[in-house]
Length: 310
Image (cartoon, rainbow, N blue to C red; front, side, top):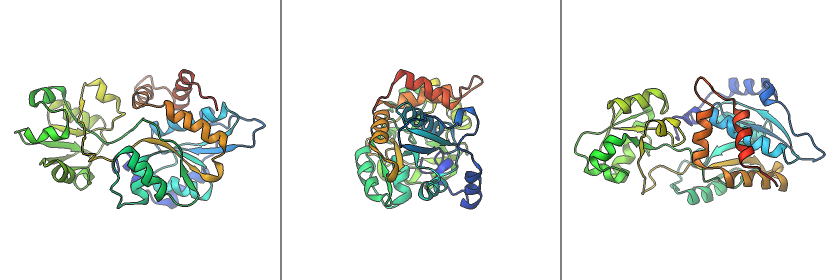
């Protein structure tokens, strides 16, 4: 995920054009993204999102929960990739954005070796620039994951990356091209688990082409993000990673410290306490397909099931 999907985020869109788009983006963007939550409270927060559905859903969950607790909220969805929206946070164009712990740590400290949820979170607090802070992290994660079919798992008794050492057939991994050099990709399989594999480049970030390649047996393993509905839909087995080859990617709010009032922190920490990976899978499913539900409606439904009170 340091590349690929959050290569949706992590690779560099040139800031000038993207920031121009940001400045042109109203705090609305349609009925789903209008200013909300007016109250006598002095708290006001502008929340952004990256340019993909899950981030917009999380933006709406944060925003609707805050608005329900007296915070004035503005939305700036689909800002772009990480380098762009972090500049927006720095210059005050936005105050808050949902983030992924491991990716955010790598952005600020490329030499960090932290990989477990707790270690990444601790390192992240030290790595963030002055004026930024992260609030509590959720159990929910959206991370890269090696997947195999149920048939492959049963045939070779493979349920973890360690088990791959005993597989006698050649192994091919379907993933984005950068997986060839990522530390958690082909090199990491070899150095961490002693597993040799080749890459079949598929440039859709674990999307339909990657899923089809795994189903058809064109690849034996596929890098598919843990909140992708196709994993459950196809009965894929997510291989365990006992040595933490892939860094934790817990969902957490990244906020300008000036906006981290007691109310804002209390509300967002309670959101994080409720949010699970299964929740993200369900919400992503609702936000896909012919009957796609918009992010604001998906978030509203989740909050009805998980009411947040400061």
